[in-house]
Amino acid sequence: GENVEQHPSTLSVQEGDSAVIKCTYSDSASNYFPWYKQELGKRPQLIIDIRSNVGEKKDQRIAVTLNKTAKHFSLHITETQPEDSAVYFCAASTGGGADGLTFGKGTHLIIQP
Amino acid sequence: SAVISQKPSRDICQRGTSLTIQCQVDSQVTMMFWYRQQPGQSLTLIATANQGSEATYESGFVIDKFPISRPNLTFSTLTVSNMSPEDSSIYLCSVDTVEQFFGPGTRLTVL
Image 1 (cartoon, each protein chain N blue to C red):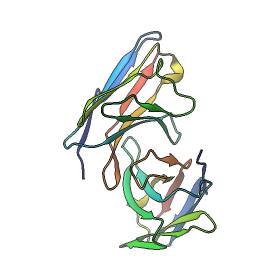
Image 2 (cartoon, rainbow over the protein chains, first blue to last red):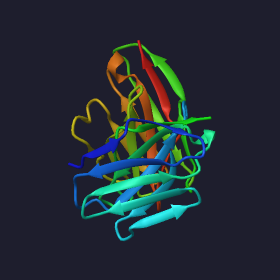
Image 3 (cartoon, helix red, strand yellow):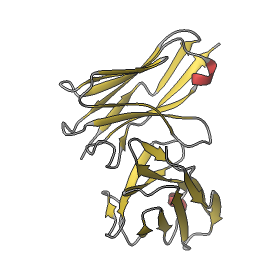
């Protein structure tokens, strides 16, 4: 089955700097790659996703890139703000969103004031 | 996006008992998914519930322990049977729309 590796497990950046979280996946059939943000005590919230026919997608300060050949995808957050502090999870699916997701272990992002 | 609700939001149960968690969606969906998030951990898919057929379980999860019902296109239940302290987790349901959204979760503590 699919295996998703996520790095780093903890990332501390200064407010205003950029943060990058990286994930690799094992199943070349995976075609849907969402990113979730989870604040303490809350449900995971979808923040951005990318499908295998696209190499990059951007939404304001958040961007995701996908390299299908290397089987890795990354989350980029620019101009970080204190409210960006949370745990971020990457995930992969073979069904374009209609199949269950395999999650990475998560990255605890800490924004230092 | 779909609006998903879950009941109960939390519960404390004794070992050996069972708890049924309900998931309700405000629109018809084909697939509903059940995930487990153990304390401080990531999410793990338990099973996929498709209306009108048996649920499909992931490796490490069995129907006797986690029976699932899917009586219609807007509702599903997950039962955690014969509970032990190791079952203490947050259980979340999700649905397949264009993107996957999660319900608020059920926080289960087993004593």
